[in-house]
Length: 474
Ligand code: BG6
Figure (cartoon, rainbow, N blue to C red):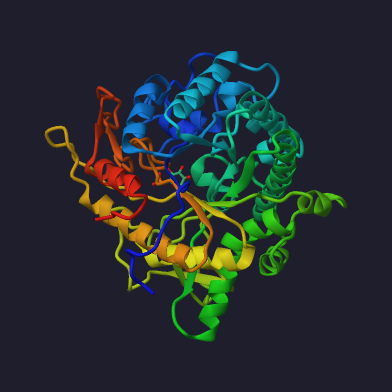
């Protein structure tokens, strides 16, 4: 049952790689691009700003050629809303339209399928001034923007992702610079879940619009999913794991697929006075939309025990011990470290088996095809004589692909795998030094560097994985 060799990926499996506009493109105010919430957020001390990043805006041809050399079948990237609509709405910026036309055409010229994320953490700054997702108009802003993308790119883009990691935006948006929370608010959590609800409505409407405008395209949500384990066989720990799984994972897919709030998550929101206000036709809006697939990002798993009531909720969504305090949610769960797992240089627990468990759980709950839109290892890489010997990244990816294959063989319908990231790019909190790329980019935290690209050992390894359609992973 557990042997690797005799399992097969389908011949059209989407072996890909992944990025996001604000982390990879640079050119943050070029050719008419407006500022996004990322461009104006306060950066963690000592981390790179977002003006240059990997400068894919000017290196896209080279990057796509390298991806083609790797053999990629898909490139999952996001479109910067403010390149298309600098203010978030109003006049279309034709130079922005041209950039993604070029990128899409370049991908297609090599047979690389573009997988486009409509929004990846970079809400236009102008819209944030108007309240961002708190403003009920945000639903029509997002609809309008999505329609522009469908009109301009729908003839060539067949895979669309609605909102990257809506759950992380909700659980940890303050830290990401994406959340717009008025100062002195009495019900912080209710406000956040009202924003979350608006995102659900916007997503549902856009999935319907996509199906109407582009009958042969597919669209799906893309939250960050990891399985939550109970710390022990104590029944109370299992309940705690169910609590956190519901709030963090199932809420998002239950709404996207079934149009309804997960019961346990809804009870949690009500007990925290955080249940969103809903209009009478919201339920119908949510139910009218159906995703074609479930995309998800997976990096690690989490383990919880029963709460003892003393945990600290971090408003920024951090889950592990912070300043000596134990994180969690009093009365619901307490985050604990899993003694069975190793951790990365950045403290993230490495859990390939949890990847398999996540597929199995999603398959049983939702019965839809699954697309992995992110998975990868952030590390301090070292460029030595033009090479990066990242055997640690190869090990990480190999172990995850092995587990993905087991899930596939067990009946999970998996259509693609896009590790994060194609080239080194700016991490959400750790700048350039936390590298994920299969391709090294010569760029330092402080802004120096030639931006020259160097394929890492993982590039050549992934090339073999793809050319053997997942058979050769050694
Ligand atoms: C995902 C995001 O959460 O994780 C990416 O979609 C992000 O934008 C990636 O870069 C890795 O996280 P980090 O914090 O290490 O950059």
